[in-house]
Amino acid sequence: MAEEAPAAETAEQRRVLWRVLALNAALAIALAVAGLSADSSALMANAVDNTSDAAVYALSLYAVGRSGRLKQLAATASGVMLLLLALGVLADIGRRLVYGAEPVGPTMMVMATVAAAVNLICLRLLKPVESQDVNMRAAETFSLNDFASNGGILVAGVLVLWTGQLWPDIVVGVLVAAVAVWGGIAILRDARRSGTPVKAL
Image (cartoon, rainbow, N blue to C red; front, top):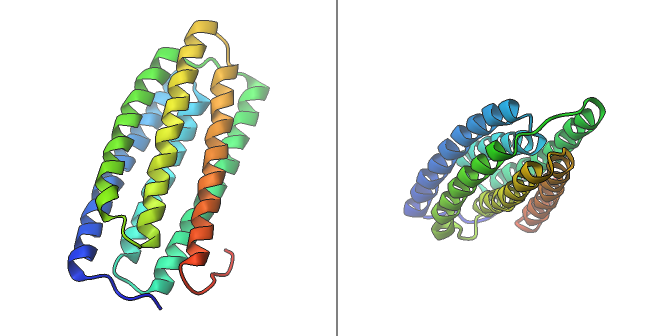
């Protein structure tokens, strides 16, 4: 079993996780509203992604300062959630391909920029307390994935505005799903390496 983290480190991890949880919850709401108004698959995927992030940060908060086994289970749940998110994004993309959509490029660009700024703040908050905790590493993985996705949405917004077509939004939606799959697998592998093997959920 992993050793307990020092009290000061545990308290700092909790403070940071509360902050990134609040930022991701607020960003998820903003992205969902913008995604619906802009009819954007990429923005909706990002909204679901940030909702998943907020749930994972809540799990990580629960795990901070607890046994290595509980930390490992929380990190495993985080990885599984990311993989489920990818399936949800792909299902939404399929729906849009069948029924069509008219994404709004400027809204995508503005929200991608805002989301990138928020995720950069999260990364700066998480970096000093990354330590050897599997859940803190998982939290940083989520923010890195989001930051990469935001760049893709910004490019898609430019292409949608330029071409007036749906495909850039769809392509980025698929890429967001791929990033989610990569992040989920990375977190599950890290969780398995962190201690006693965890049974698949």
